[in-house]
Length: 308
Image 1 (cartoon, rainbow, N blue to C red):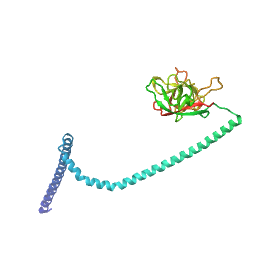
Image 2: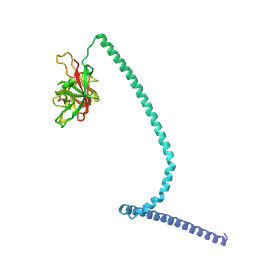
Image 3: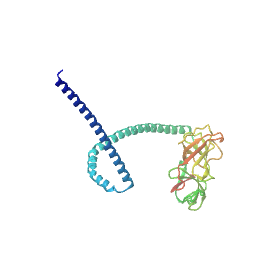
Image 4: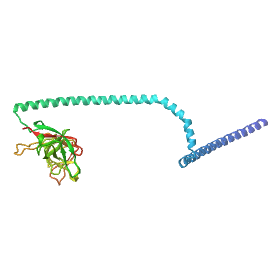
C-alpha cells in the first residue's frame, strides 16, 4: 500500500473518532441541561405554590394573569357552549322518552286495576242485594257535623282538643271524630252548649279495635306507644296473621254478632304499618303504626253523629 494512502486513512480514522466523541459529549451535555432546567422549573413551581398559600404577595400577579386569561376563557366557553347544550338536550330527550314509556306502562297497569276494582265493586253490590246482606255501620250511616278546632294539645300530657260544636249541634259524648282528610282523631269526651272536648287517639286511655285492610283477619287493639311518642301500637294480633310494612290499618267496627257493638264505624283509616316483628317473649306480633293524622296541628274535624 502506498505510504500517502496509509497516512490519509489514519488521519480519516482519527477524525471520525473525534467527531463521534464530540457528538456523544454534546448529547450528554444537552440531557444534563434539560434536567437542570426541569429541576429549576419544579423548584420554582414549589416556591410559587408555597408563597401563594402563605403570603398575599402574589395576589396582584395572580389577578393580572387571571385578567389576561379571562378573554380566552370566555371565548372557549362560548365555543364549547353549543356542544354542551346539544349534549344536554340529547341526554334530556333520551331520559324524557324513557320516563314517558315508564309512565305509559304505569297508566296501562292502573287502568287495568281500575277496571278490576270497578268490576269487584259492582259484583259486591249485586251479591249484597241478592242476599239482602246488612254489613257493619260505616261513615255513610252517620250524620256529619263539621267543626273548627279551637284549642290544640297544650303539652305532651294533654291529649285532647276543643272543637266549636256542642249539644246545640246534636253532638253527644262518645261520638266519633275524624279529620277532614278522613283519618281517625278520637271521641267526644265532654259536651257543652257550643263547644266539646275530644279525647285523641293518642291518649293513654284510648283503645280502638282495628284490622289490617289487606289482611282483615289480622285484628287487634290500637293503643298509644310507649315513651310518650305519637307512634301507635297494634296490639294482640296473632303471630299467624300476615301483616306487612305499608299495610293500612282501619277501624274493625263490630266483630261478629257480639252484644256490645263498637262505637267506631267500620273502615275509618287509622294509619300505616311502619314495622312488624315477632319474638319468643311476646305472645303477639309487635306492630307499630304511624297515624294518618297530625294530632298537634288539627285545623278542622268532622263529628259522626248517629242518625236518629
